[in-house]
Image (tube, rainbow, N blue to C red; front, side):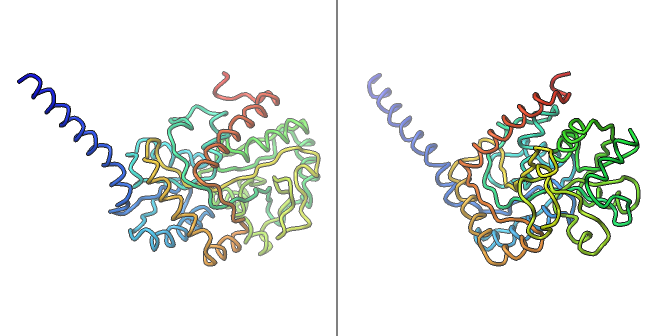
Length: 327
């Protein structure tokens, strides 16, 4: 009798294991069976919001389910990641952010999450950041802006979309190299920084290409781009390295999921978003926003984010920039 019970138990155990082992695969195969939510870490109308909404419309057609966009702006995208880190790892809650709060910012600030709390899905774009001032300001060049800051310690202010962001560190780097004393003013999003400049509340804004239309319309002046190459749309504007500041803030736009999301679901999302970003329609959106189409899949993006974090930690250490982590 004991042998029979043991045998029955073994058979039952194998059957249960087979059922449980097949469950994630079956769930991934059926995924998605309900709407997906994407948390956008920036304000409505910001470049990332516009790109994500258009990309999501195209992905809906591929996955056959609605995608709901929920804006969670703040701290250069970190607020949305804090929410995502608490979400169920089932593929139904994602976030769209630039890589800064997933990499560089983690070397500067104490966050509610770590890099290991996320499963990167894919990268769909890249871009550069720039330093802009109001068109009627006295600064025609970045050199003039720096000279004024040096001549008037503590009086020049600049805005970014978050303390610890790449833009913030870039300006800290310039300030240290040039021996400046200027003031950083963080705002929730890119449009807020531009409004602050246009309203005369700060002297300059540092951010992604959200400023393009204002520069083209003659409302703002682009003084420099924080990249290793000039922008084709503004070929006369120098890069920071050209001006003597060896700093590159190549920002990439990514989709991420909570850690623990099954690999087959990550792969399915990666495939759907990659297919959508390759469409001519999305290419037109990138062109309008002066953003570049650049793809990294799940595996490559995971490795890339780790490398960016490590490299940025080295930059911070070399510059001796104080952070919340070394106080």
